[in-house]
Image 1 (cartoon, one colour):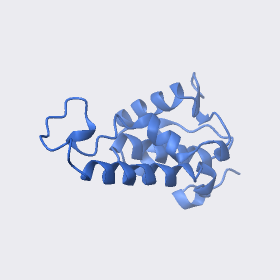
Image 2 (tube, one colour):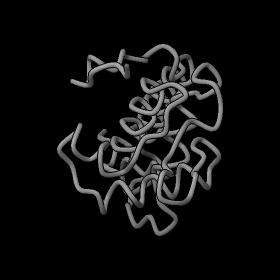
Image 3 (tube, one colour):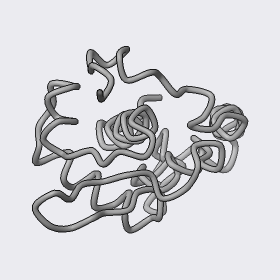
Image 4 (cartoon, rainbow, N blue to C red):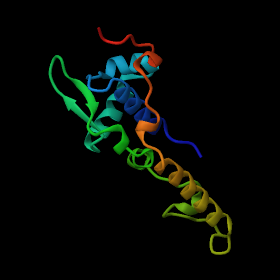
Length: 142
């Protein structure tokens, strides 16, 4: 299984916002920190804001910050909010055409594995992963 880049970037934006604590972050600086596209991060930030994980401050000195405490942001919830689906194989989809689905045991095994993956993410919060700003290559504010 592999998470989409969208989910990966969502987790990275939240990690960066958590490291900056009460400071506002911008899409531009976050893109520089990670070396990824501003356009992609804009879409990610919009979804995280709509989902209630980030709050946006508009205007010239605006930016983004966490909308809730890091210990309230479960990783599993973020992944559920950002992944388009969890269809690991065809038989997980609504338009499944696999001929052996009624007799296949693989589906159950994969469903169990996916459940274990999400359950593991649910045991961790953003607070478990927070880095110091210096670990992103950022000097602390004077």
